Image (cartoon, rainbow, N blue to C red; front, side, top):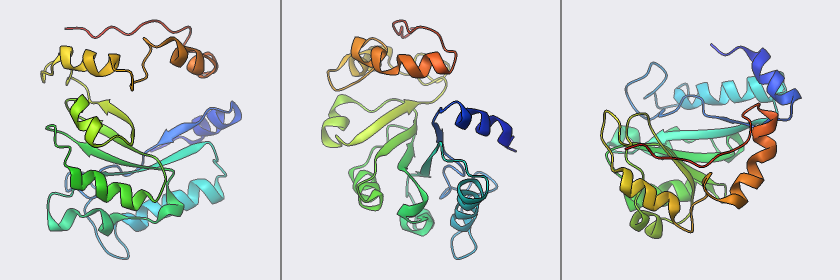
Length: 197
């Protein structure tokens, strides 16, 4: 359950929120997922969008339509597509280093010019993957996948973070750009990122 007071506080403070409701909606592991058709998961997503956008007037939310890999006939992106009026960013969750080109191209087509991202990944994409799939806006590894309990190659991650195409807290230009956001959100001054082994 979301307490709308907090979202309103963020809106009053002019803080944008990457809002990713009903993520992995084409899966079969959460109560809201895996329902195709007119009254399925997509309708639930649209209903929430309408409620927050039109009734609650929350205009600081950047809506992230997020799906999992379309690994079966029941999980195809198109069956869960809400329409481009209902999201700002299209996103894919991909664990097990499963960054197939057809996933990338499928999401690219549905995004229709809007940004798209790797919302949740296990191990980060490699530089080779990002060369083949250059238009991902961002990627985020999930808990424990970098040198933690689930493994992960910290050296490979450091290579990726230090690549010229990546922005990170190690980059002074990026730190300058995000300084106002960090100040507004009480995060304090930035420091360099350290990837723990």
